[in-house]
Image 1 (spheres, rainbow, N blue to C red):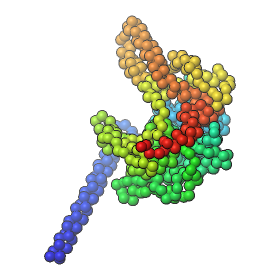
Image 2 (image 1 turned 90 degrees about the vertical axis):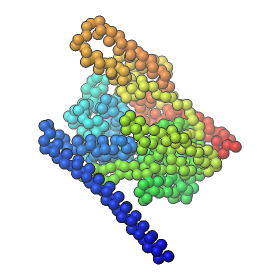
Image 3 (image 1 turned 90 degrees about the horizontal axis):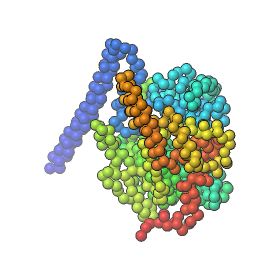
Image 4 (image 1 turned 180 degrees about the horizontal axis):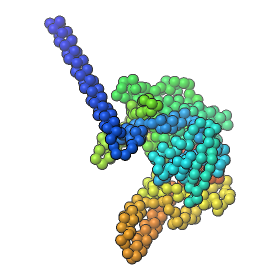
Length: 547
């Protein structure tokens, strides 16, 4: 009887192995089949298509389209993308010392680093780069344009910029640029230390440690860690920074993956710097990934009060996988969880509606309750919810359109032309009268366009040849009405815009340091954090379980 059972077990095992083997071979065959189809299609297209094609661009587009319906963090990187990603991780690169965003697919200089080539040459925030080494960027492929600014140290790059309608030429020497993830720290009111961490590159933990130890020497008795608008970075740096303020041997985060070896538990491995100092962590809607790992760990162990706005909600972990010819795949391999067991991922990309492109939230199906070390309730389903929430402005469509233009930077440049000096960085405010000046400035601005204006103008252009003078006059009236309405609509986000313009102006006069000097003096959330750290009773009550 026992022998019969044993033989049956062996038989079932063999059947299972055959099934797994067949399943694996079937999947492998399907992958190989699809690759062969693409290869033969590509060869035929390259051979017979009536016009010349660019193989690299065509393949890059095909690969990106393959990934576009997954999550937005799984991407194909060509050689230029690989270099840019390496810069973000390592915190050093060779360039001109300017931070770039994009407006109408052209690079817009949003910050110039003090003392570097761009600064010494006279480039300014708001300059729109139109050419790099005689390459016309209006015909260039989107965000790849800024990669042309990178190169070997001591080499030169020529650029043409549009500054308020004027074309200016610059010849700049590339140099090694160090990206300090802690651009500012200071002992502020009531012996409170303030550290701002902007990214989790490979220097993040060492720079936070350096700043904290210096502040301790200055006699701080409490700490504010500002992670607002920190989009994240390296997971191991987040673990090390959490470990600075948590005892050795605790779970900081865990990951769960389809591939077993990528499911890990990350423990604090070192002796901490300080487990007692009262702490407040500041977050907002742009605090993501590694920022949420640090915040979640400190919140779950009741080590810090979290203040600000709900974080972004990125609970996914990526890994770079090397492909052929120096290219890479950045692929989501796992989800991460805070010590209490929360996954703070907001969007469920696996359930994307392929027809509409809409991605549902995990919280749509309900949220789950977890407990901190002290027994406080915390929740999953999208982002870290602060212990103390500050008011959040919802941005209007008009404000979003404004932020995608160069209008704020153009106004700041005009402001500086009219004002050779301003008050000290810590005292400067952008008043309501200044905001009215800004609204008046927008009446002549041509970069700030809403979708309504664009659609209406495009429709008018298609009919313009056949329109009579009366209709043309009515068109002008409608366009002016739309412009007036959009400018007036900005008042709904007056506080947000006043602060945004103030920071751009401060950058023009005092660089990045001036922005932070102003923040520690006048920023509402920082002021509230200092007040809380002064009130030991309230601070302690927040971290204790509510009965």
